Length: 514
Image (tube, rainbow, N blue to C red; front, side, top):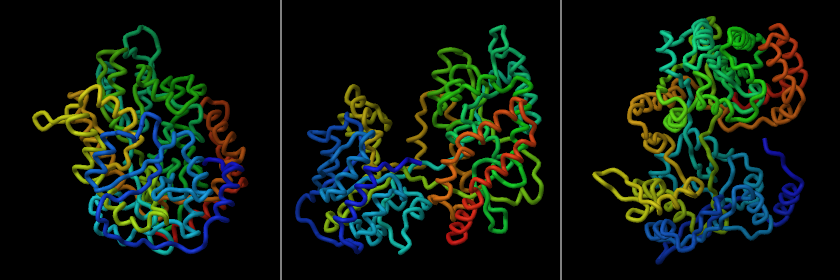
């Protein structure tokens, strides 16, 4: 959660004074020539709109003249807020997400245009925007005022050193007990041939509990329904697995403690600071297994093979755990929205709203999508035997800023996410790309919590219990400094710090929206 600074609060107050009340409905005009409109975008300094062939191509294809207002990523939202508060804002603005405070202020002041009437004709926007993303931006009045910029919603699994496993004559681990056996063999079997006990099954981050959700322990916890995901218990009652009052997270801590005992958990994981450290350890050939996105495997494997040329990989699902009947009927609830920023049309662009939506729709058409990914044909790329060949150095210049200036994505486009740079693992990537997407569709309840922000949870996560105690106790249990029962005492601290209020807010929202 980003802290709202005093300056932003002042801007919000100023904005409220500038804007008049009442929401704005979109209107339609029929342009006779190029439609000129201004657009605010968050992009790196390499993106220069003037005399830019990519920009010119969009204008020509959509009968437009777009005036780009570009802000650097580090200062973009502050610059946008100043523009909005002063009243000198563009026709189209980029927002962080549906909970953007400035969006809420503008919406209540009637300075954001509803786009519902144009969406049925925007076939590409509708096709390539995830349904959960549309649900997340729909307001209480039933209308849509933001157009999502989508990204993939997926479940990541385990990439494993197949060459190490086969060298030691091991089977793919299936149960938690298998994982312990596997971890012990990796720690003691010298799979890298160094002659030292310097290999481990897994590592993790120092903030394995309260930091980024890329922690391995949080993903192992999914097997016990004990992670940071939210669940419906089968009767409509919601809970977050890690803080379930039955103490089920102790099973995960016990699993990690056993991994640590047999030497399978890299001992210096306590000092691993930073979201990417555990990932880096895998690329450095230190650990056998890491939870990661299948689209990153080829890049990671390329880095790994510079150190260990014979490295081979495979993918492994979550451990299979024998769950009680009551736990087995629980269903995970989707909280991801798939939204990676949104677009909104302001009241200044209301007479051009239909045209702007058509421009956005074009960018997700087949022609527009090629332009988004590869740049201008003949300048940034050419087709050779039906395949894209990037033209250097023009393509390199384009890709310096393309990822930031990419206004839309086809979120489930396999060709976008899988670069196919290592031919031998392409079938593996294609197989698990589908599995990672299907897992979300099959294992999660799609409606009810996507995009929800609990104010009580925001307050809870500022408490010492969350920022310090949860991670501290978990670490102490794993390394044997405290018994498993210490987690029971920690749960009492969690609820005393306001967790019940968090549960109540999630429950109320879920009940109203499922």
